[in-house]
Image 1 (cartoon, rainbow, N blue to C red):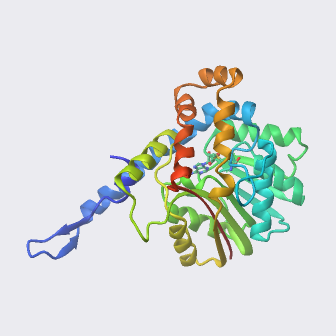
Image 2 (cartoon, rainbow, N blue to C red):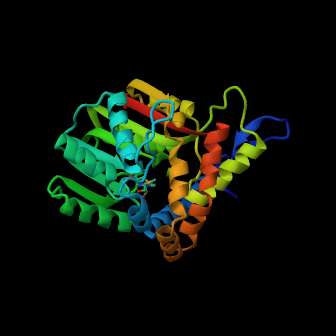
Image 3 (cartoon, rainbow, N blue to C red):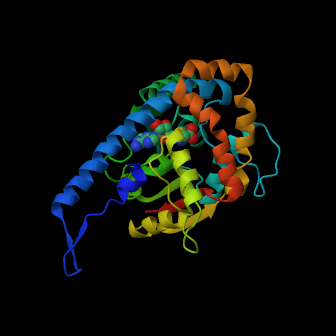
Length: 316
Ligand SMILES: C[S@@+](CC[C@H](N)C(=O)[O-])C[C@H]1O[C@@H](n2cnc3c(N)ncnc32)[C@H](O)[C@@H]1O
């Protein structure tokens, strides 16, 4: 059973007369299954990033996210510049001009946290499931003389070890797709956000399904992406927005930047097959090799419109 199937595991039982009743035994089993599958997922994510982060850094640098190639995706630029431009464009789009205390949820090796701490002269905390990433981010903060203002730790975004109302900017760049409980993830982001603070969440989504549900081929395509990149499932941007309204975030804004970022995968595919990357892939192991061999899945996902790059901004 895949994670996305387990999420929909039914616990309503039909009586003989056709009416429905809730089975508490089934509810307990349902939540136990979800909990068990989440633990497996966290371990897979941890191992995936422990194994692949140093190769990613060596070939692609410290930012583990898409680049920005202009609204129409036609700007030609160097890959790292495109990734920095994505951060800058996001700040502009979200109307964030500064912050004092930033939380980077799913921080990788600290690409965004260190960039933002430096830019805003602010404090930043980064959390990741990967001890290798947290250690590398800490090393990088020392090298950049930012260790007094930044800290990196292994912590789960679904149960954050922070007090309520702690941060004035909660930033999550391409980690939401890994979260097994999207509601809980956004609730946690909201809980730790200070009143008046801003949440910026950017994540892989699937297309909106209000007009037509996902086809069997699309489901299969997504399942392939989930398997390779350790994702439980993704949802549409409209579904994220519905959660945001319930939190309730204020000043909600969403956008779909798929066209602006899709060229990134061509650049990654080209650079994945250089001799340097090839040797690194062999050393990083099978999961990373599988990830590299499957880069075309994302490119095709954007081409068909199935995969979407969703942005959500809101204030508390
Ligand atoms: C694609 S990387 C993005 C890294 C970073 N945001 C960047 O743009 O460079 C995804 C990150 O999400 C983190 N992540 C995934 N699930 C998580 C969870 N439940 N709690 C904390 N971090 C998580 C991974 O450990 C990894 O650091």
